[in-house]
Length: 417
Image 1: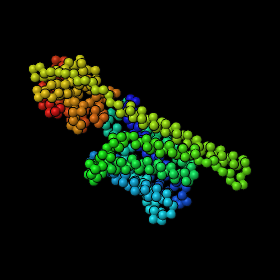
Image 2 (image 1 turned 90 degrees about the horizontal axis):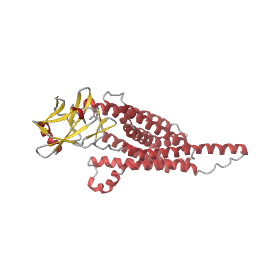
Image 3 (image 1 turned 90 degrees about the vertical axis):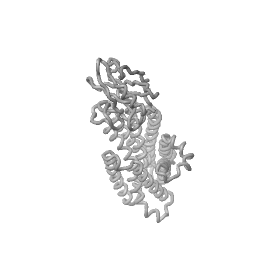
Image 4 (image 1 turned 180 degrees about the vertical axis):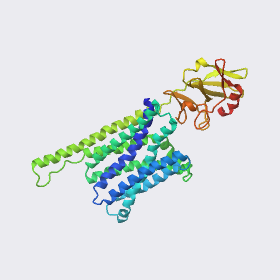
């Protein structure tokens, strides 16, 4: 159950953080602007980005092929990179009239596109769990998945709030510095993703850049720690901020009050550090646990007698997944699985599916899981064709045995070539 929980908690936390932290720091900057134009643009883009990301997830799930996830997210990332570059230019160089004119549009595009990119990924997590459950919404597994998503998203929100409060305690120059560092870290991750999309679409010559991109792509899961390191800059900058100077004309009591407020603000930095420790532990140890693959039970060799392969019902009536292997006449090892679904109904199919091929299945937390894509099977659907379900094979129950025709397994040999 812990693994199921972490499989939703970790990605929800990471997507929520990469969405929430840059927006939190940007909001602090915009709140200090004398003009409400940028704050209005931020609020409007936040609203439209939120609802548009939900709408696109609904369209994606409802139509499957109407929206290309790759193209949508690639377009969003390209928009984000342009908008972030404009915002950084404006913060770095105050006297750029051309950039000033584009700043409102850049804020709108950055906020909306961030929600399209990360929000789309975030909402797909619970929606995927709901679709995979296929009506079995009262199982422990489904509950743990939903709790994992809610917990990860909530932790990300609380962490982003802590960053917001810590950033709000910084002076203007230091605030700009931490925002640029944070956005630069995000841009590294976004640029790598965009390059991958361009390579996949043959817009970039894969052979030319693959030597550079291969090690980065193979280790891109570690990029989240670049984001964490950028977040750490917030409390470090806050702790190193000079002690407030005594305002002219202030008496000792007033100055002590100013110092007390400064010390209080520093506590938000301690909250960010504590959250970062939890983030790092969860993204490292938590990801390890979440991605652990259960050991696949070795398939039991079986042979044919009188044109059928028999398995004693006593060995498969425990409700767990059982794997068998038959040596075909052509030399292929044909694997098939059997599981008691309930009563006297069995799910019987090849240890392969039409989507993932002969990669096989294993049992985790009393659920049947595809080894390749980690999709959970609904036991009730095992034995029926479609999706990631095992390819069904013919069988019958006779004389206390589950009997599979030898011809069925011989016919399936080509799948295991």
